[in-house]
Image (cartoon, rainbow over all chains, first blue to last red; front, top):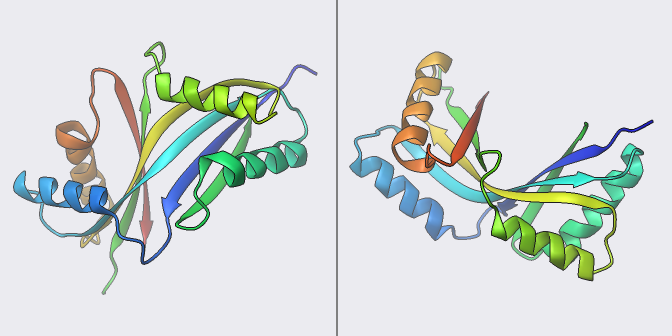
Length: 85
Length: 85
């Protein structure tokens, strides 16, 4: 089989952590006339193409990557979605 | 009804657009010993809480926000997911 995995990783700030970038977007949207926005939070989105066919191995590898490099576990959470490509 | 919408917006670079940040992550993962990675692409992830109950109106509003402010349509794509909160 010649299948690979694509991982979609969302990294978001934990609840209660200040998000000045999100606030700036909120204000900019307000000044453009967009009303009715309660809150904006900005995070990161990372796509990783992996040469790995086993879903649980791929997930374990991506979790390690998140914890070692991609996310700051003190203030951020991560969510992983895997897709066969 | 007292329901609101939460929009999850992913903003990604279009195919073919250079992604130096993704390359840097790829190299950093390599130097941490993670093998078998073909490509890393970094994008943005934005959550917007909207005081809007109608899904199609919410989607139209978020699309306008993406095109006017959140995404650079020359080099970026956006994808919107809506969720009742």
